[in-house]
Amino acid sequence: MAARVPVPVSVPVSVPVSVPVSVPASVTAQATVRGLTRRFGDRTVLDGLDLTIGRGEFVALLGRSGSGKSTLLRALAGLDEEVEGGLEVEGSVAVAFQEPRLVPWKRVRDNLTLGLTAPDPVSRAEAALAEVGLTERAEAWPLTLSGGEAQRASLARALVREPGLLLLDEPFSALDALTRITVHRLVLDLWAAHGPAVLLVTHDVDEALLLADRILVLDGGRVAHEWTVAAPRPRHRDHPDLLTLRAALLTALGVTPEGPA
Amino acid sequence: MSVAELEGEFGGAVRADPRPRPRSATARGPGKGWHRRWVSPLVVVLLWQAASASGLLPARLLAAPSQIAATALDLVRTGTLPTAIAVSLERVLLGFAAGAVAGVGLALVAGLSRAGENAVDPIMQMLRALPFFGLIPLFILWFGIGETPKVLLVALAVSFPLYLNTFAGIRGVDGKLAEVARTLRLGRAALVRHIVLPGALPQTLVGLRQSLGVAWLALIVAEQVNADAGLGYMINDAREFLRTDVIVVGLLVYSALGLLTDALVRLLERRALVWRREFLSR
Image (cartoon, rainbow over all chains, first blue to last red; front, side):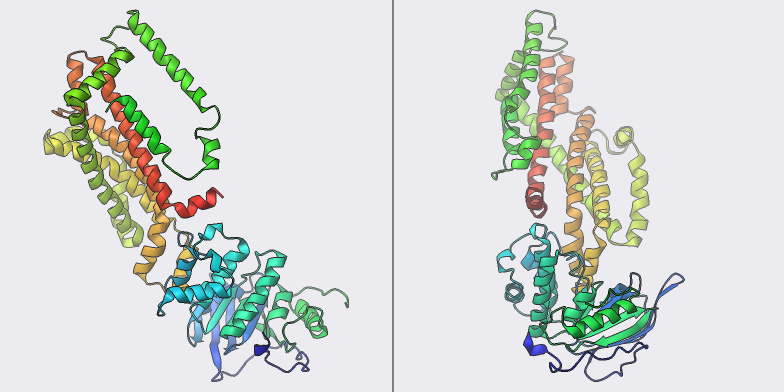
C-alpha cells in the first residue's frame, strides 16, 4: 500500500479551492472530460462539466443526491449515448456497480472470463480471484455469495481486464460496516498493485477521505469544489488534516458539520 | 405396461433427484405421514368396486376397477395398447417439435428486435385469440382427415405458450445485466448467448410445461376426428361396443403420459436452473 503514497508525509492538506476547476489537460491524463452536458427532459444534470483524471490517480466524487455523480460515471463507462461534450479516455474502462451485478447463471469464474479477450483467460481469472481472496468460490453460483463476496467478485471482474480507468459506482454502500472496512483495504491494495486511475462515486465522506488522492464535489452540474488529500495511507479518520477537510467537505455538501472533535 | 406400472414410473420420475431436498419435502414431498394421502383415493376405488360388484353401477356405464385392470393387462398382452400409445406419442412428438420450433423461433425474432416485434407480435396476439379447437373444421377442409391436421393442431397448441413465455422471458431480462455486458465489451451475439437467452430460460421452461400440457389436450381432441389408430381411436372404437373398461384405460394412459412429460420437464428445469435452485434451497 505504501508504494502509491503520492506525496511526502509532512505535506498538509491543500487549501480548498471553491471555484470551478480547470485542470489543464496534460499528457498524463487517463480521462479528460470537456464541457460535458446531459439533460433529462428540461432538467440539466451535467452542465458543461470539466474534469481530468490523471494516470493512476484515485479520485472520489461526492455530491448530493441527484447532483449527477452517477450520470457522469455512466458517461465515462460508455453507457450513456445522449451526453454532449468531449469525453476522452485512454485505455480501457471497467466498472464495479453498486449492486455487484454478477451474471447469476454463470459461476464466479465464468463471470470473470466473460468477454475477456486476453490469452489464457481462465488462469487470469483465477489469479484475480486469488487477489480478492475468492479462490475457494471460483465454482460457486453468484446467488450463493455473501454481499462482501459478491462485491469482491465484481471488483475482480473489473480488474481482470487491467483497465486504465476503474469506475466504482458506490460499490461499498450496501455492505455492512465491518465488511466495508475490509473491502476498502482490498481496494487500496488492488489499486497499488495494478495502478489504474480510479473514479469512486460515493455518498460517504469518510470513505472518500480514507481512499482518495483528490476529492471532488459535484454541484450545479459541474465540479464545484476540489481538494487534494495528501495525508499518507493507510489513513486514520482521526488524522487532524482529515478532520479539517471533513468539516470543509460537509459544508460544501450543505451539511452543518458537528463541533470540533 | 399397466396403469399401475405407469404410475410407479411416474412416481419414480418425480422423485428422481438423488440429492436431499429438505424444503420441498415439507412443501409437497413424501414427508411424515404422506401415506395418509392414499387412504381416501383407495376408499373411493373400493367403493367403486363394491358398487360394480353389487350391480349398482352397470358395466355399460362404468366398468369395475378390477375389470379395468384386467383389460389393461389384456390390451398390453395383445399389443393393442402399446401400438396405440406409439401412434399417439408420435403425433405428439412431431406436433410438439414443430410447434416448439415455431414458437421459440418466432419469440426470438420478436424478442430480439423491435422490427421483429412489430412484424410478429401483432399476428401472434391475434391468432392467440382464436379458439384453436374451433379450427378443426378448417383443418379438415385444408388437410383432410389424415395425420397432418392432428399433428398441426398439436403444433399450433404448443407454439403459443412457448412463444408468449419466451418472448416475455427475453424482454424481462434485467437491463442492468445488459449494461454489464456493455461494460464487458460483449458483442451483440455474445450478449444474446450469455445474457439474453439464459435469462429468458426460466420463463421459457414455464412455457414448455404449459405447452406440453396443452399438447396432450390437443391430441385428445384431434384424435376424436376420424382417427384409425392411436389412443383416441382405441377409445372411440370401444365406445361403439360399450367397452367402458377400454375407455377408462385409454383415459388413464392419457393422464399418465401427461404427468410423465410434466415430470420430465421438471427434471430438465432442475438441471437447467441449478444456479437458482442452490440459492433457493440454501
